[in-house]
Image (tube, rainbow, N blue to C red; front, side, top):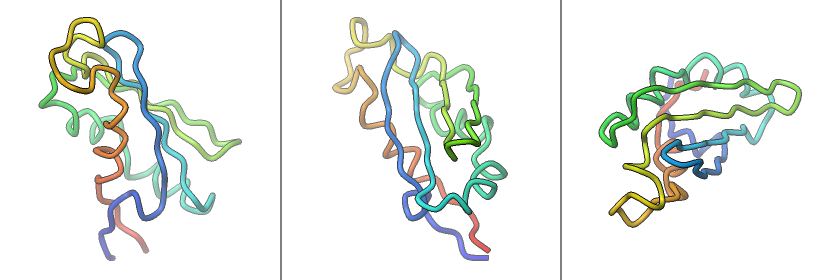
Length: 105
C-alpha cells in the first residue's frame, strides 16, 4: 500500500488553550474517516509533538461530522504568554500533523 502524507486526504486547523494544542482533523472524503481512525492514533500524534515537550494526547472522535479533535498537553512550550517560540498559539502545528503519513489501500 502506498504511503501518503495526511494532507493529501484531509485538512486540519490548530489553536491553543494555554499550554494545550488543539488540532482538528477532517478528511476531504468521508470514506477516509475509518482509515484515519485506524492510523492517526493518540500515540502517533503524541510522538509527533514529543520534541516540543508534549506529555499526553487525547483523541475525540466526531463520526457524525467525519472529524477528529486532538488535544495535546504541554505542546506549546508554555503557551502564548510564556513561550519564547514564534508560534505560541500553535497555529502552524496543523501542518506538522498533516505531514504525518498514512497507508492508502
